[in-house]
Length: 521
Image (cartoon, rainbow, N blue to C red; front, top):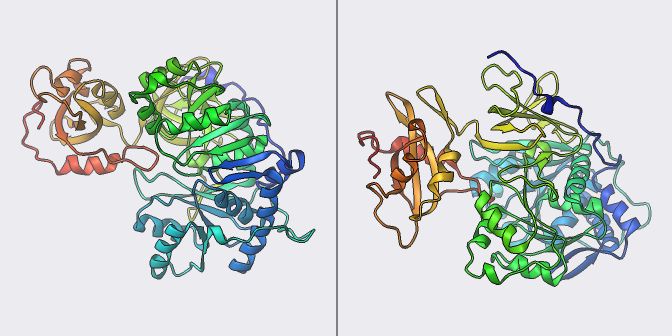
């Protein structure tokens, strides 16, 4: 096939919104224009923008005193509370890059992340602080472990501020998900993060009248920065129950509800869904992994509002695409956010593909990282394109559809097989409560599909013409047929719901190789 140009992907992008401010300057600006507006509402009370900015000032001074030198990296554990916000912006205001730490990581992963970022001090909730104290012998560069609730609060003397920020300096270190290898440390600048906050606010329709419900297990800077950019009110909902966010949204007259696909899927399956309503929410927004179209449709039909998805990576601050609430497209992750270009390229030849053809997704824009920590060389090609490692295709109007991770797809003979596409059929079988697919080495075909399923309580026979494998194999071409099937107690997933396919691939490779094809066990 000759190289082709995708006109939809190549059209000039709209200018990226966003002021020339340091990251913490977004909070300073919000406090100036709306000092008495509630910035964050939690079950423990409200914090205004003026009070939040004052607490950040004091935390900046406290962190500098604790670390002892400007520029040292401060780790902040991503807990869903006000102390996270104070420590996050406080570190940045004091001139310290902030490394956002996931408390759900295991000890080895936690040590890897903090060691890679060379964190000098960590601000953490008491429970995580206790873990870090035990891990301190494995972290020789770690100095203080500061309990978040004990950060000083109150005003600093006038004029006592951190150093003026270089907008192209690193403000935040985010870690990749680590689903296919050890997490990488991503260097994000003030300019990256402010641009993306503006992009998100624009496509989500956030402004000073917005009230957002955050129903995530952890605080993600994406939701924090975009709400602060808009001077919106954020309602934190720490209750993981599927219906808790609905209750919170109605109580506080929210305009936006943010959640994870795994929580929205549970809400869609909740027996009481038919009794629920959303009084003031204009859109339900999902991200982090894929939400099945049927689940999104069930929620949208019940609540009468769009359920939209987005797409992004740690390397892109993170959002690059989002469905517009006024223009949802089932199965799509939306069009590029303002100022962002996207194209799809041939996996082998690296040339741009026409609309509708599958290949690797590439993006470029002002939110693209400065690079990986401790890695030399450019992260992009000479034209600024970043290869995402995801397979997908675009429609003519720019709507992007994800197919799978490049590292997850495999070859059966000469066919490229997407585990996700098989899973989307497999999950429709009534005996299957949850599922995942990985490649199983095969001497003649290269690899075949190996399914792992969690059974529903009333599951019937797994073999025969009505079993899950037969169900899938009767609906997909031969190269996507399930050749092996194992029943498991749970599907291994990351904290944000992504399948840990590397773990499944290892299990598939270790499974017996003498099973007859098409004979799931």
